[in-house]
Each structure stands twice: as structure tokens, then as C-alpha cells.
Image 1 (spheres, one colour):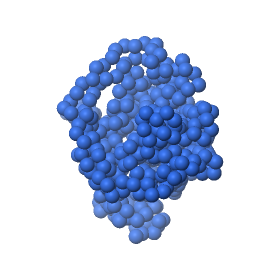
Image 2 (spheres, helix red, strand yellow):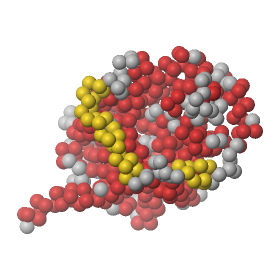
Image 3 (cartoon, rainbow, N blue to C red):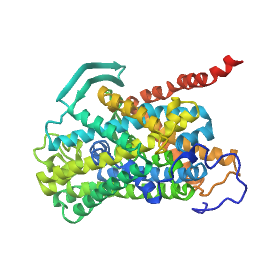
Image 4 (tube, helix red, strand yellow):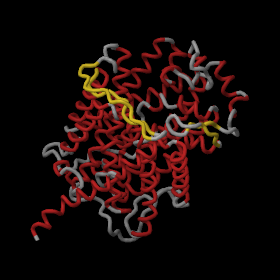
Amino acid sequence: MEKHLTVETKPAVAIPATSSTDREFVKGLGLTSSTMLVMGSMIGSGIFLVSAEIAREVDSPALLIGAWVITGFLTIVAALSYGELAAMMPQAGGQYVYLREALGPLWGFLYGWTLFLVIQTGTIAAVGVAFGKFFGVFFPWISSTHWLIHLVKVPPIHIGHSVTLGNMDVGINTQNLMAILMVIALSVINIFGVKTGALIQNVFTFAKVAALFGLVIVGLFIGRNAAALAANFGPNFWHGVRALHPVQVGSGGTLVLVSTLTILAVAQVGSLFSADAWNNVTFTAGEVINPKRNLPLSLALGTGVVIALYIACNVIYLNVLPLHGSPDGATILQRGIQHATEDRVATAALTQMFGAIGGYLMAAAIMVSGFGCNNGLILSGARVYYAMAKDGLFFRGAGKLHPRYKTPAVSLMVQMVWICILCVSGSYGQLLDYVVFAVLVFYILTIAGLFVLRFKRPNAERPYRAFGYPVLPAIYIVMAIFIDIVLLLYKPQFTWPGLIIVLLGIPVYYAWRWRRTAPEVSAV
């Protein structure tokens, strides 16, 4: 196992530390802002919701905690591995650049294509609509059923027994209007310099981290419930650890029994996605001060703090609510974590502690969390499309910086328009489900790229070397491949559509290349 920080003494070759275009950026992100960007992009609404679904799948307090521990291990190992790539190539575009340099431009494009089409934009749309949903707690006028313009109802389309498309309303209601207004406001604000976006990010990230920390402290010392403690931490804590667990294959498919390792892999859909987006800071590498030091540090610090908070929050849920419950339960305790109303576990826990006021406190916390999360995702995502445009693989105008503020203004606007379309179409939820598998594939490929670059470019400057290389990155790849295989077998509704979205990018890639080279051919 290598030391955490070492300096490469051999002469640097092959990979430039910065490109000429990156020098046009304003270096406005220090270690604090970079770390806040990691944390703020990770913490959205997932930690407040997905534990209910995980609890239903694993049916065990020990396995609920185990699912989050596995997610934490994978996330931190990946972040430590990305640290080497980030310090080695501190350029705008981050993961897109790493895949391009390690595996070739096609793989970089497929990542950027999927990021733009679904991963980044779909997440922003979903977080924005969740913001509107919880805004409706305070103002009931804001609702998904309060239509301002209802265009069409798309009927469900069944593809085999595994996948259902459609079944969504297209139009503008007061709920997605709040999402659209938030996206427009944050996109415009981020034109006015990276320091402005970083200030908003720092304020809102501090607020939501404080809210999560407050939930942990209050739940630990004030909200402990004797009935929940007895149900979760007595003999039932290890309930189901050695049992076979039922899994429904596909949407409306048959039930099969699987082992504990398999059910933990299935459960990673929710927890991994809740811990995702930590890599967004790499997209902004061109604007990070001293990136060779601050990028690896921010990745390690940010993911470490958030994962610790996530695991602590789940311990608090088990302190306040019993894991097992009934969907027909008349009280919060009777419904438990598994059947919390609309899966809002955090809201149920806070309501159990403080009564009705707890629901309002949690709604406010989720709104703050969503606003800060979307600011980070909007700020960072535009940098990837900027880098792609510089390579001739995206709209040419997206590769230009604002002449005064030195931000990718056109890229921000293109991203904004597509997010608004997703909000109006109502398709973002389905698209997000479909790319969980693909997101993990790109993480596997990028960490595999770490091995490729160590072999192909052994003399390249590496200010930071991945902690635990090659053992920890190899363990990550094996575990992530196992999870993806399990999802292919037991959750085809989350996998095959995602693969199709990625593969559709192949002809688009060659079309962009042809577009770039066509004038040269005609000139000859």
C-alpha cells in the first residue's frame, strides 16, 4: 500500500496540467469552496427518503446500516482514486477528460452524452420538483395537480414484463413551475462568476450540513424512542441477515429468493444514488486554486463527512422509529421506517419527536438542501459540456466563456433549456431510474482508467497517488461489477433502458466527428 501523498520525481510527460482554455477561467474555488461543492452536490433529498425502500428490501436493521456502510466504502474509495486523476489532469470537464485520456474520446463522449441527456439534467429536474413538492407544504396552492398548462397525458407503454415507459403528464403545474423558476434563477446567477456561485454553494451547504447534524444530535439525545430501540436493537437487530430475501424481478415480474449479498447489492440503487455527484468538483477543476492539492483533499474530506452523516442519520431513524411496520398503520410508529408516508422517513422521525411542527422543519430543511444541491449541479455540469465543445463534440457556442465573468454562459443556458424540457415532460423520474446502472458503469471505467494511465503514462506527474492502490481500486471495481451484474439480473427495468441511452450516444458521437471534419474533407 502506497503512502497517501507522494511527489513523482520523474519528468512529466504526455498529459498537460492545464490547457490554454483552462487558463481563461477565474481561479475562484479554494479548498473550502471545493469541499462544500462536493458535500453540497451529494446531499439532496435522497437521504430523507430512500431508507424506507432499502428497509423494505433488506428487512433488517443490521442490513439497513450495512447497505449504507457499503455505499460509504465504495464512495470514499472512488473519491480517493479520482483524487489521483484530478491532481494529474486538473482541467475543466473532470471525469469526461479522464475517460478521454485513458480509454479514448468515444468513452469520454458517451459519459458526457449521458450526463447531459439524463444524469446531471435529470437529477437537477428531480431535485427541483422535490423542492416544489415541499414548498407546497407551506403553500398548498403549489401542487402537482394544480395545472396551469396541461398539454397531454402520455399513456403507459409496456415493453415485455420488465419496462414500462410513458404514463406521465406533460405540461406546467405549480409544482414543476417552482422547479423551472429555480433552475432559471440559479443558471443566470452562475453566469456572474464562479465566486458568486461558490458563495451560494457555501451558504446553503453549511445550512444543510448543520440541519443533518442537528437531526443526528436531537435524535441521539432527545428523540430516542424506547419502543423503537427495543424493536431494532434487541434480538431483532440481526433479523434476516442469514435469511433468503424476496426480490421482484422487473416491473410486475415474479418473486425470487436471493442471498444476503445479493439483496445488499439490490439495495445499493437507492443509497448509491443518494451519495452520488461527489465527482462534480472535478468538472470545475479549471477554476480551483492549487488544484493538485485541493482537488484530492476536497474529494476525501467532502465524501468522508457526508458518508458519516448518512450512516448517523440511519442510526437515528432506527433510534426513533421501528424498522418493521404496516402500510395500514394508524400512527407513525405503527407504519415504521418501511412504510413511512410517501417514504418520507426523516419527516416521520422529526414528526415523532416534535409533532406537526417537525414536518414543517423537515420540509424547510429539504428545500434548503435541494436549492444548494441544484446550485452545485448546475455550476459544475456546464463545465463538462464546455470541455466537450472545445473538443468539437458539443454545440460550438458552448465552448465560449462570458467575456466579462469568464463562465461558460452558453453551456449554462443550453443545460437550463434541457432541464426545463425535462421538468415539463415529466420524464426525469423514469430517466433517472434507468441510468443508475450506467452511472456505476462509468465509475468502473474511470477507475479502470487509473490502472491504464499508470501503465500507459508511468512518467506523468502525479502530485497525489491514490490511497491503497492497487488493492482498494481493484476491490471497488470487483464490488461495483458485482452490483451491476445483480441489477442486470434482478432489476432489468433499471438497466437495459440505461444501456440503450448510453449506446444511442455512439452514432451521435460519429455524427459530431463527421460534422467537425466535413469542412476539411470538402476543402480537399
